[in-house]
Amino acid sequence: MSSDEYRQQESELDELYREIIIDHYRSPRHKGHLTAPSASHEGLNPLCGDEVTVEVVVDGGTLAEIAYSGSGCSISQSAASMMTEAVAGKSVAETRRLIGDFTAMMRGEESVDAEALGDLEAMSGVRKFPVRIKCATLAWHTLAEALKQAEAD
Image (cartoon, rainbow, N blue to C red; front, side, top):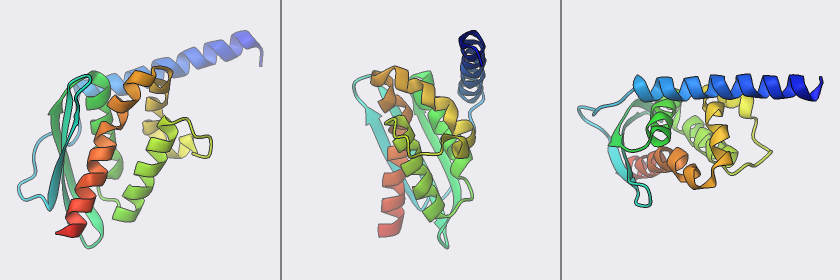
């Protein structure tokens, strides 16, 4: 593959990733509140004003329901939507693995199989802007805290 072909392919991939992120921002999944959450946790990024609250229902070791609410930049809100879609219905163990894999990807760790993350890989481009990594990981850290709370109750 020539360098021109590689640049063209990379440009097309960047555009696809942007489309996925914009779609989740404009049409968020699982945004709202749960009737009777097992736990909820609020995450804040005071540097840029992002706020995300994650509510979960854990039933028999499974993330039976999940919702988020909040406000902030397109990256934080898209990441929250993408996260909820990725973990809904998964076991708590699978969810913890995804939290670890996503945050490792955002740190640029090469041990992560980014393709296995599916659409979540779209957020990998955020690494080009280190100040925005916290925006992309806010909901994930908030989910981890909500799961800890659910297990403690």
